[in-house]
Length: 305
Image (tube, rainbow, N blue to C red; front, side, top):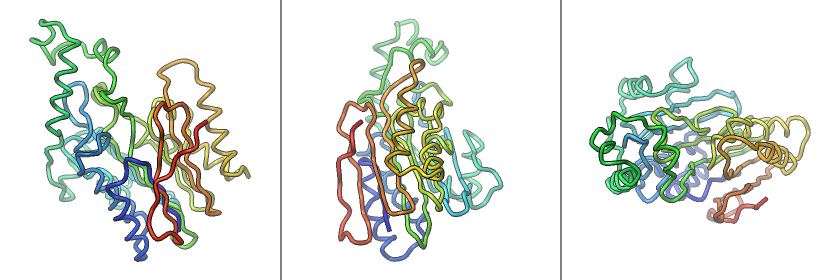
């Protein structure tokens, strides 16, 4: 059994590891762990601790993928809902659709017994408002939100350059290879923006025959390159895990226009290998690793390219 998670996924790592040790369904274990991250306000990129859009509204995204069946459940721009990874799992289990967004996703959440949550953390609301006021004229502030938002979007960046996502991957010869993601997305994003986290093939992909990959940070790039699918497809075509990631990184490096930034690729293969690679992220990137031979999960540095 192999399990990896990004560094900010720490609140849920013990839960997932204990469930995997006990023989629980792997995808259920991934979702249970991510659900712990989503309610922890100390994680400032996911769920309750995340950042709102330009209007001060939380819109959360999540997805799950069963690598054995290649079934996917995905939700995007969901309002008033903290456990969006669990909601995505319900989409996969209950509906013929792959993705629900916005009000439709919230309606489905209500139908399936999810509470209506107060998602906006008070400190996030304070920082959002203070930063927005710095960019607006008095006239704009008086009329807000009935003003053009795009000009403001171009001047505001994340308070801590937070473009992270919680990604969990598991690989086991008997239980398959699976992926789960969750994020509150880019702070001060234009309302309705989706990143790569709920997009199959971009922010995540899993195939139990070959491997899985999931990405964090600049989703605008991985959507353009279908980065997660590239990694898994390259493994299918005979590439080693390291060479598959190198191919995906080379494709990202070919982008010269549009919004550009750093990307972190987390990946596992069906042979029991894993790699986490930091492409152009300025800060140190770390990730969690656990396999069946380790007594406890370990925090390790990602490889920098």
